Amino acid sequence: MSIEWKKGLRREASAYGMCRENRDALESLDTKEEAIALYKKTIDWALEKGYPKFSTIQRDFHDCEQYGIFVDKVFHGEMLDEQQVYVFHHCTGRIRTGLNVGKKIIPMMYFANGCDITVSGAGPAGLEVRVPLYVFGQNAVFAQSSEDVVFTTYKFETDNE
Figure (cartoon, rainbow, N blue to C red):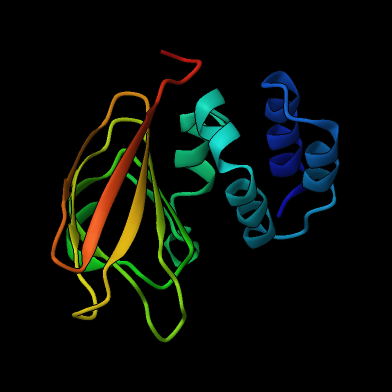
């Protein structure tokens, strides 16, 4: 991770009021993977505040799908159940999710920056799970529960609305 890249994120963190502890943690990061782990740790605050700016996310995090961060992606029914947290920025299409028995994961899904996406339940039969969908700002997120997956949608306003 370049020093300029980190400086830009830290500058935005200060401008958006990130707490000192997390700004210090951001300063000590060495990789994009570590930055994303911190982002996910503070995801509710980040999405509510609009941190980092969407243009920063598009520029610096567009290639982070392996970490569960999706930017400007069109989905075609992909199954997403390998990670605890998924974050979608300006994504469209259809995804599926549910309990990952092997990893003992029920994903939490976060949507921001104008997503238009349908989420369908999929998973092992006979094991009903509840999957939370967190929608920040103006997005069109449609949940299609199944016998085994029930979605609960939580909607939040953002500071940039």
